[in-house]
Image (cartoon, rainbow, N blue to C red; front, side):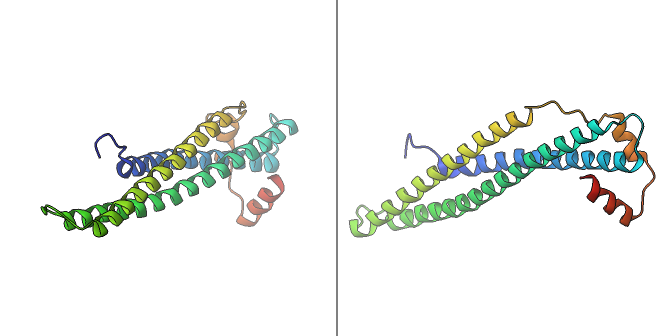
Length: 187
């Protein structure tokens, strides 16, 4: 098909690209959420003088925001994974049908239409289904772009360079039971 879209190549490539981007965002958000958690627990346990109750509440709100964003990313990643599995199945079926058609026709001058037309119909349907899945993946990409805009919609008061995060990381560790109790009360 001269001039036809190459869905069997474009669709898996788009899924792979998007999966990598989302996976990277998920990893980054997991780190950020862990940092917030460390600081909130530290602040509730150690009660540093420079940390106000307002600051702790703000960090809790920011953590809730980051967790919500992370949840959306994870859901989007699952959607993309499902699309990827479907695209993989459709692509294999499409290529298999093309091979079958090529074997059937080979170098023959004529082939009964009763044999060839159903193959063309099946190939066309698979090609259309691949295009439909690529469209879904493209919509998910648009959703990701909206999520990234959402991520930037507020100013975080805690970042990886924050002095309080360094203090929280350097603080002596508590027993597992004390940590769990503090984490439950803090977050």
